[in-house]
Length: 282
Ligand SMILES: [Zn+2]
Image (tube, rainbow, N blue to C red):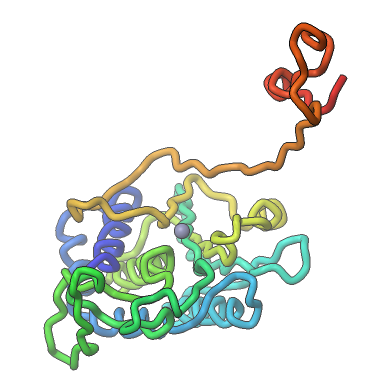
């Protein structure tokens, strides 16, 4: 199951940075296996919360849910606001390990794309998560939530808005941390959690949040849990994640085609202006 693969991915990262030895990983994996039903139950509750960033009431409920998940695991948390009033807060948590030489920030986002339920397959609903035997457009069938002790097939899918992008990242990070601690292990590096609430609308205020809380977020490395699982199912680490920048450029030029013999060389050419970074006639 992709969620569990995500958790194992995180665990691999934790191993890379903090822990050593295969036996520790085995202990963590056994913990996940023994608790997968409870982990998935909590995940379904999380997926039931509508999470479009511009719906303030909904997005606040998601932030609160994450804070409660962190608090249950003994992690202190707070909401990080931006300079601009009323924008979705980032949920921040930290585990400071005394004498740790490194600090890792784990990032995921909890908001999702806007949704039109009418465009979904009639058998499934965006905020009513269910297990599917395979993708619904390939004949997948809904599987009732397994009773205690019933097996969970790792090939099942979870249907629900943001079940992949990116509530899966939030859950994988929190539960991986939980699994490490409950397996009787201690990370040797400090861990910071950063869960953004407006990534799907362009992270408009992320820069402000990072600036405003620069000291709190100081670290050695960020790990972004917001990417695809490799088709092989193997843990995957991409180095050098990049974002994008959007801008609107207004280029002024003639309203009609101009004859080159009459206007060539002296009439401003919008293509040349754009290339030279001059967006207004000079
Ligand atoms: Zn995403």
